[in-house]
Image (cartoon, rainbow, N blue to C red; front, side):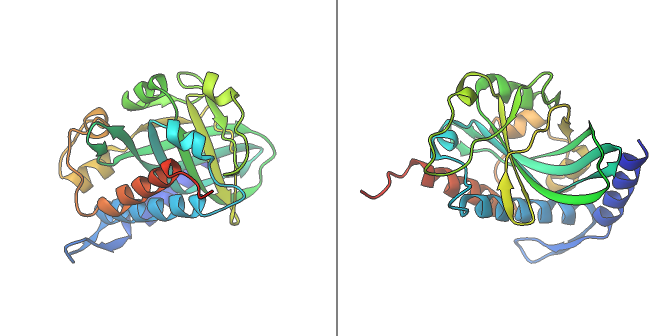
Length: 240
C-alpha cells in the first residue's frame, strides 16, 4: 500500500506540472496538457511496437482485435509487494472507423520481491466482443471479469491458437527498448474522469466514446492515425 501511495503521489505531481501545445497552437497546462501528451506518447509507443520486426504483434492478432489500449510510462515498483499504476488511452473499431480516444487509469498489485521502480510502456489488445463489453463497462479487473494473457510476438511467427479460444485481452510491454508479453492478472482498469473532463470539456461516458458517439478532435487525430496505420498494415498482403 505504501509503494502504491508513493507512486500515485509522484505521478500526480508530474501530471499537474505538464504543459503542451494543442493542434491549434494554444499552450495548455495541467490535466489537459497531460492528456494531450499521453495521446502523443501512446501513438509513438504503438508505432515503435509495430516497427520491431522480430517482436511485433502478429498480423493475425491485429486483424482480430476489437480495441487497442496503450499505457505510456506505466510505473511498476515496490518492495516485497509490487505495485503498478499508470494512465492510458483506448480506442475501438466502429462502423465509421476508430473511435475517439477514451482515457483510463490502471492500478494493481503483484506479489514478489520487487525492489525499485521501472517505467514500462504497455499495449493491450481487446480480442473479442466479451472483452470489449468489459472495457465498455469503464471499470473491470483483468483476470477476473476479463481473461488476460501475454500476447504472442513475431510478425512472421505462427501465432498460438490459445488466444483465439481463451484470451479477451492480450498484453505487450516494453522495458529498455525490448517488447515482450506481460502478465497483468489482477490489475484494475477504470475511466480517468479528470483527463476525460479536461480533454473533452465535459464528463463523457466511457462507452459513448468507445462506441463512436463523439467525434475525433484535432488533438486526438495523431493517435487515431497511428492506430489506423498499424491495423491497415496488418491487412495489406505481403509482397510475394
